[in-house]
Length: 551
Image (cartoon, rainbow, N blue to C red; front, side, top):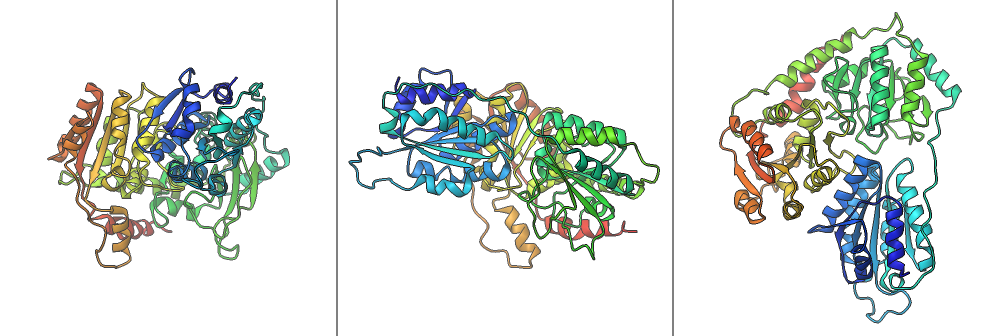
């Protein structure tokens, strides 16, 4: 068969459902082979969006999402989403085209060393220089992408290799199971847990999986140990649970940090130092807390993270072993932590019913939470609103709040929402973007319309890069260089075949979202927001109020 046919059969063999991307002339044989395949090709309007969609598909399914580009500028446009997948532990396989490697007739036109470029931001990158090597390279790329810690793999297929005739067959995926934590490690952690007085559970991104979530809920229900989530750990346990102490949305000084300060043992489940640290460890002389690292892989030691003990292996099994080996201890005391929870909830309620317009972010979060079903998915771009949703939006199921706190790239919110809708067409999905991040991949509105998706985009409009303005104000610097003008977003949406709306009063938002959900199709809602209180609330008021709780 033709090598490109073999490539597609190998992808089908891996269970690939979609390939996202923009083909070029170097991909035409592969494109022809895909036309006869069960794999659906999703053409996007920018390679970056294709990469974000593939990464999100991997995040939600555990199977590598696949994206495709040509050589040169097509490949360079994939660098950001590849880094996004790699840092965020999202399984993804990238396929890029290349000029003939045996006989080039165009000099160095569009030629860059894509494999070398991808090396520092992938787990595996290989040029395919022989058609016979396709089955092995594809199998290894998927194996590496899926293996803990998940991430990105890259394959380069030149057009002369793609057109070769080859007599070969795909390699079947092998059966494998993750290793489990060693018995002595389990017993050591159980002894630490039994000796502690104020244990605390901290849940990170790698725990955001169905089986792990089930085990953690059983552990919390049996022991009564309170828990805090990182931004990417939201929803692992229903955050309406009476043991939820909040989200580590800001670096320090928030209510959850007061509970972290009081804990004498922190079970750090599924977190690594790639995600912004939810707490800082200090030298043993100044910090008497013990930290246990529970993850698929050992801890990467950092100046603020050097755990005292580890349980390495399948996280769900590790938590199950702890649950089976522990009973609630009579000397455990969570009174202060639960007091922190009460004050945290009182504070997150502030502003939730404020009628001023433009909207306060607290009111915006409240409106979205009220209208979204428990299994509904919000996909956040990167901006100051991400902090407000992390703090104030209780996630009730795993992976229903898609935000990135590893690379934290702008431009991912809309493509992530589109991928979520492909994976879960029956669920309500809302993309929540700032005007800055939205305009980085706004052209994908056309893709969503072409795919006939039911999708709502909440566009939070402050005509500025609000996150950086917040930092600028906190540093006492002058207001400079971060404002811009926006298009008429109603006309912009209409031009793509979507429906656009502009909010004129705060109480219009919830009825409008419900209306859009009922109508179906792609809708964009321009929501003016008021971020003027961010510095006062996040940097001054919250640390001051929470500090008053310290015994």
